[in-house]
Image (tube, rainbow, N blue to C red; front, side, top):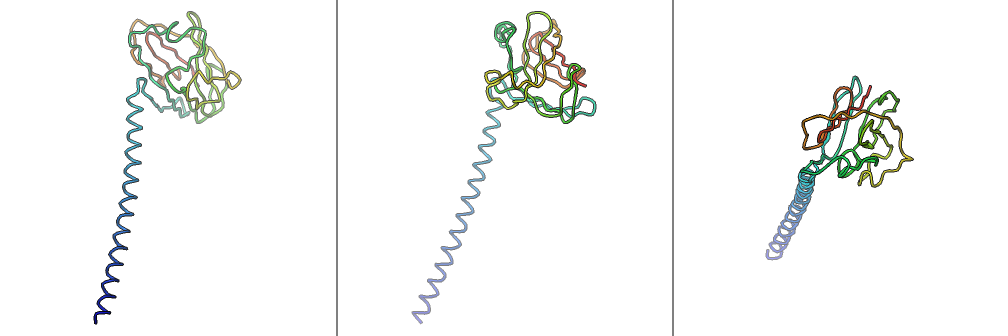
Length: 194
């Protein structure tokens, strides 16, 4: 009788340890998943809290679906054109990583053909006259114009900037007539897309 009770107690103890082990494995998995969720939430919060928040917009130009992603700097009392953003130099048309534009179908930019795809968007600001608009095949540049290589340009066109009386504090890029419009400080740069 003693031997059979001892065997039964050993079996119960083994089963208890087995179930406790399974339960703690589930808790570990749950904790790991919770940490992943938290870190993802922290990454999103960090992106929203950076000085030039990351913006993504989706829209359509005719039947073409367009997506634009850019860092949105603010004026903050600085002289933008010719100082913060030098004239006659390639500018990433935003802040931080390169701005990119994605077209799901072939388009024309300022009358020039462009195949469907994702491209980084650069501009060359000028103190007067037309600005150069550049679409480059290397769209995922972590440091924007610091990594820009002219040999990867797919298209270069010109666009006429407009200067307005009202100043816009934070840069915006919108999908509206005539295609894509960049606004910052007193600049409005329409880029025709068809």
